[in-house]
Image 1 (cartoon, rainbow, N blue to C red):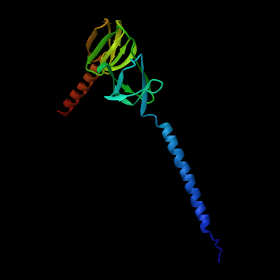
Image 2 (image 1 turned 120 degrees about the vertical axis):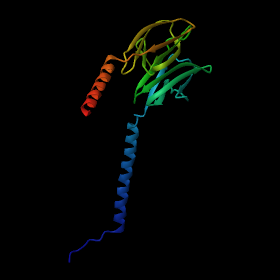
Image 3 (image 1 turned 45 degrees about the vertical axis):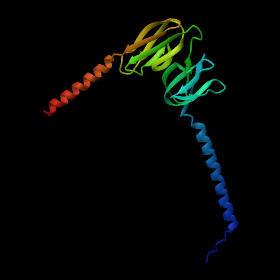
Image 4 (image 1 turned 90 degrees about the vertical axis):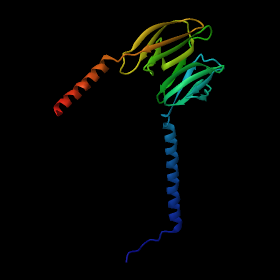
Length: 203
């Protein structure tokens, strides 16, 4: 008959406590690591030369900046509006990417011009003097008077490159119609041709 050593209850409890201890450490480190990595859901932007008494909203909700002047928002498409004296002085939509840092530039503080830009179809990407200003429809009452280069990009459409002139104290309203690109027209023609040949084979 083989001898079976007796295992005391205290040793079993010590072993279970040790396992529980290691399990708690593992969970704590896992949570810390996850929190450290989980920054993909937010991004931030800063407003250059923003009026001190302005109210900034993202999708209609007021947001406040941190001590460095940065505003934090969740990723995805957000409509950013800046209000002053209960009036909208800036409005545009941006697609914010994870951990991205964007900037919105007010290039004028006094004797400014205003500008409103629209396109058909809407949501074209807007560049003014090579600066990314989000998507149209776009409004900015703090734009430097004078000539500005406008560029509109929308997938499937020909880009628009125009020059506009803005005068002090006035709001320049500009609307642009985008035309389908030749590549898009060719792809549609190719699809139509394939459908036509498919119908002919079934006859």
